[in-house]
Image 1 (cartoon, helix red, strand yellow):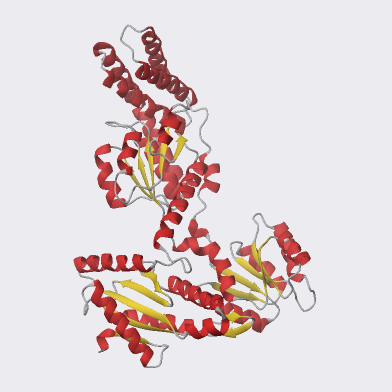
Image 2 (image 1 turned 30 degrees about the vertical axis):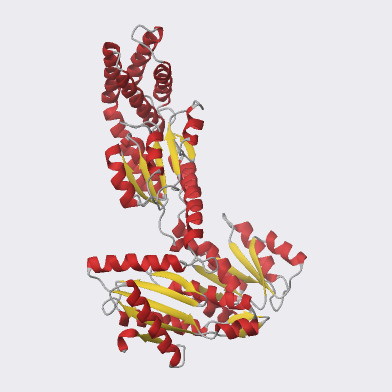
Length: 551
């Protein structure tokens, strides 16, 4: 896994040296395939020559050997036309191709690197990692009590919060922590627009804009316009609804909870394969590479990629044929497929796009475009997939998905002989909230609990909305007692959260029942036991956690 730009540059340097070392062998292999075609009029040898030229063209472009890549491009087009139209050894074009191969050998003997990719410059924008998102929050308000209360509420959701009552102290701090997000009160005791004024001054001093959410007691257009001009990304009116505020903050930090994008690259050019993999790894993605078609099926099924990048020309089959195979595999019918090729005559591109492909990129792909294209495709695919398995209100797994996950995790835990616990959570008296404060307020309570569970539990734990006000948690490698301790801490935090409705504050609690597979070894029995434990917790007065094994 490539972790830094310096490591990436070292990798590229080694690849470039390897490319130069292997260059004579590559051009000799092209010449030999061409001679075999002339001797035997064997179309397969012509295909081999074309594919090898294609690989040479990609690699030479990648490392900036402009003359060599141009010569390879011309030769590739000539070979492709011959493949498409058919030709024998006495064809008039044969001598022209022979001369092109001689020219390719000449340039390969002393390659000139005259147009190297400015990779360092491109990488800065290309590899903005998801783990660079905001977790630190600055609350700026001279009402110290109000600011501390807001900071405490945010801390429950896992944010690191620092409070500033003096603008000068805040100005010094933001210059040292430019990635922090600022919650800026507009009105100060000595200046009704102090927050906007200070942010305008700070924004002018910064190389990159500071992310700032303005908070105000006023809600008029002129003030909102000034807030936007001061770089405001959001504007919330007091009293602050913590659910709305967390929604805003989570939009900048939600990427932290996502699994790395899984990218499978299939290309017979190891040089180009390694280059693309290194770029995507540096952007924080999980990458698997395959350079032979016989390893494709096993990797597809084990890796379960979010997106597949395929070279158009592969040994044994074309990338288009391989894409058709992928489209016939259960679970991969909708995975995005992006073709990679040095092809720049636009005849092949529509053909590839019409035959199981989603996009077409010409190699070598600039780092920024490669990362952007993969990000776009995976985000869209995950969104569509999420609509099928996630609850619309909370974003958690829906009832069917959490039951399916429970069955899978129990099989896994039994195979590995590791503990697993299942927790059923029910929001106490949610009907009273809905009746007294409205269903919108009840929905905000459910969303706040969903968010708290996601943020407080481990990434390996699986959270779902079981239905209505019920939630379910699958806790891997955890017995019932440890699961109870974890959920009970979340219960305590949730009971202290302040919810808002019609400018009035209220609090809500939840009850929980837990069972583990040590006592209940299958999905039905463990879920039934957790449900019974939940009812026990409610009968004992709610706002508590009960374990089924206690019976």
